Length: 371
Image (cartoon, rainbow, N blue to C red; front, side, top):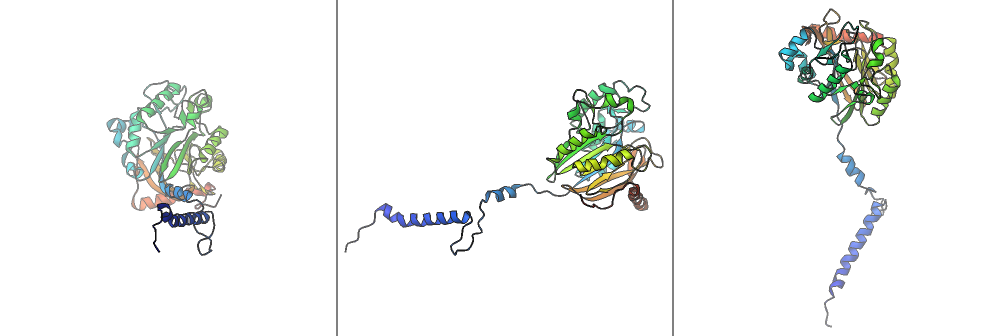
């Protein structure tokens, strides 16, 4: 019997049937159906989320180093004028090792302005101060302290202009309240870090004129606890690590005062992972408050005062991943000629032991204890 060739469509029919069956099977499997052998399919319902997840940046531990109070008065002005890039001395080699580094800049950045009336100590420095900080490895500075507006509103205007021109990040100071409480933000090893600066120390006669408000430039005040806590909670919403840098404590007292002991747990409850600061001109203890890390006093750093106690200084380096402070490390130094010189040998070991011993009157612990 003569066989006639099938028409083109008829020849494709078996292929179309097979393709349709395969497509239906794939749909059934993707919907959580069964495979050809009746077993439950392992094909995900929607592979898209997995693809998105694989693109998320990997978060790895990072280090952040803190130094204490910095100004450029006295012998330091000569160093700054001679060579701003080496003005902070050998401690720069320590500061540069960290992924992020911060200090307290305890001076107005102005060459003019009107000195605060009746103030015994008023500090100011030229804009090359920012050159010195950057050259030493400092990434951000707090200017929220009892010298940040030593030359009043005109000095504030100059300080903000100098920071903008130098493109150097400062916190705790601003043209208004929103800017003063605004955090510095940077992503480090996949960690979104937010740093807020504020001062708990203000001379009573300057509290009103120095405190930033919606209509007035000035400093972020930790005396306004409600506003500071509001800033911490806001930062918590979209940050992996929230750090609060404070100017606080009582001069030459080795143990935290009641105001410090009261504020620290409130900031931790609001979402702070690290609370660090200084003002007392001497070192105070550091350690864990539940899972957060608190340092009550960093002491002088680049500073003209270098007595037996006020000359003890160093660099606090924290290793952090997200909200977990994994490790603290103290690199002790001694102020010589206004700048910190790292200690070595037996002197270094003794200084580290002394620093850890300062924790005894803080209520802090050597290890995290849970939230």
